[in-house]
Image 1 (cartoon, helix red, strand yellow):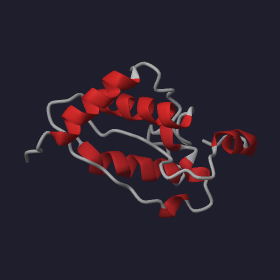
Image 2 (cartoon, rainbow, N blue to C red):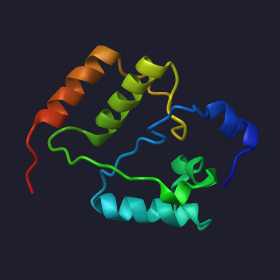
Image 3 (cartoon, helix red, strand yellow):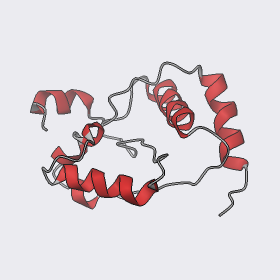
Image 4 (cartoon, rainbow, N blue to C red):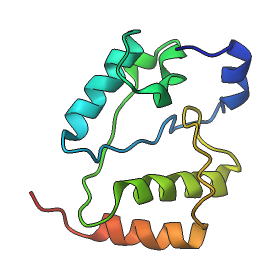
Length: 123
C-alpha cells in the first residue's frame, strides 16, 4: 500500500509536528489499533490503510505516538474536530490523514474538544 512520491511531497509540510490523527474506539482499544497500524506498516494486511503515508516516511518507525483517553464523547467526533481545527489553522489536512475534516465547523470543534479534553477520565 504505497502512493507515488509526488503525492507524498504534495501532502508534506516542512514545519509539520502532527502527521496523523486517529482514533481507537473499538472494544479492542488503543493497543490493538496500534498493533494493526504497525502490521500494515510492515507490509502485511491489517485493514489500516489510513496511515499508509506514514510508513513511506524515511523514519516512519521512529515517530512518537501520543494519545488521550476520553469518556462519554464519540471518538469519531473527536477525530473530526481535531482534523477541522488543523485545517482551520494550516488551511490543509495533516500529512497522512485522507479525511478532509470539513464536516464539523471550527466553533463546534472547539466546544466539543473543550468538553472532551477537560472532562476527567475514569478507568
